[in-house]
Length: 318
Image (cartoon, rainbow, N blue to C red; front, side):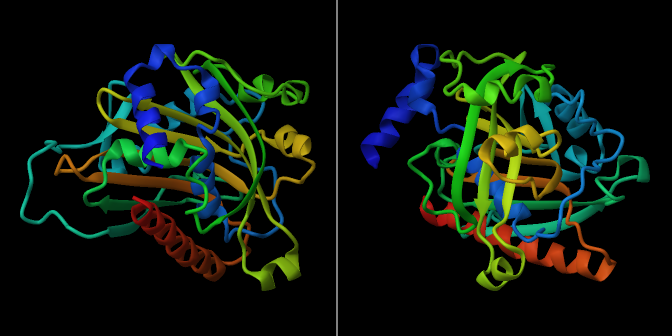
C-alpha cells in the first residue's frame, strides 16, 4: 500500500510525464460518493431535470457556471473559487485554532433554491455536508477518491460495472461526447497535463448498495453519471462535479436502466485550518423520486446518515 501511494504521489509531482493508464481508475470513488448520496433514492426515475439542466446541450462548463453562480450551491457552502479549484472562504491555511476539532466531525444543513432553479419535479432543497478530517492530508483524500486501489472502504458501493473516461474541453457537449459509439471505445486520453480549459470526465454506471429488503421489493439499483474531476497538486486542492443528466446512453451501454435523477453534486477537498487536516464539503441537489414531503424528509435523513458513513469510512481509511 505504501509503495503504491508513493507511486501516485510521484506522479503528482510530475504530471506531464504520467500516462493515463497509471491513473485509469481516476474518478472511480467520486462516483462511489455519488452512489452514497443517491443510494436511498430508489423510486422509479423520470427524465425531468428542470429548465437549466438541458440534456441536449449540457457541458461540464455549464455545470460549473451553475454551481458558482447559484447562491444556494457554492456561496452557501462557505467556499469560493480560486485558481481553478475551490477553497473555504476566509480560511488562512496552516494557522491552528483552539476550536479546531481533533476528531472526525460532520455538519449538515439544507438550502432552498428558487422555483426556476429546482431539480426534477420541482425539488428545491439542496443538501450540504461539511466534514473535518484531522491528521489526514488532502492529497491522501484525493488519492483515496480517485485510485482504483481504494475501493473496499466505501459502504455504499456494490459494484462498478461500466466506466469510460476522457479528457475533454470544458464546454464540450457531454451527450455528444459520450455517444453509444464512443461507449464502445475503451481507455482515454493519455496526457494529464493540467489546463483550466479542459477537465477529466468519467461516464460511469455503478450498482448501489441498498438494504436486502429493498432489493427484494424493487430489484437491483443502478446509478449512471457523468463525473468530472480536477486536482491541483501545487495547491493540494481538488473537486468533483457530477450529474446524471443525459446519461441514458451510458446506462444502455452497461445494459441497465438509469434509476437516479441527480441534477448536480460536487465534492470539494482542501487543506484544513491546520495544514495537516483536510476539509471536505459536499453539495447535492437531486430528485429523490418520492411523492410526499414527509417521504422527502425521510430521504434527507437517510442521505445524511449514508453520507456520514461515507465520510467516516474515508477518514477511517486514512
